[in-house]
Image (cartoon, rainbow, N blue to C red; front, side):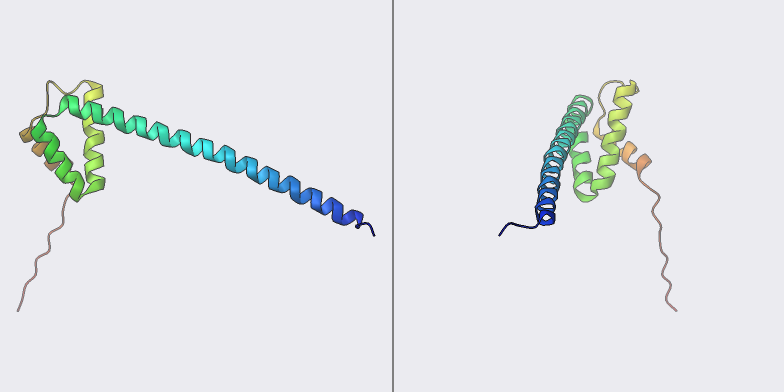
Length: 117
């Protein structure tokens, strides 16, 4: 007995849809890979700028901050890279200057006074 024509049509549609999904997954993977490579290149470029404009002491201080507060460390790294690219850094940033920069960029911290009666 032969299959119903509707069943054949349904099977063709399923195969077509599966093929489209496979193509989409392959195309999406290439975009994600390209984005990943672009991000890695940008990070490598930022690290090169930091090595060029920071002394060893300043780099160690920045790395210590980045270990304890990753978001704040990234913000400081971006700020230093932006200053370097704009030409506002003369020479290298030493540890003292890095400390001042960290204080300047640090968000205001709230203090709490606890009083016991």
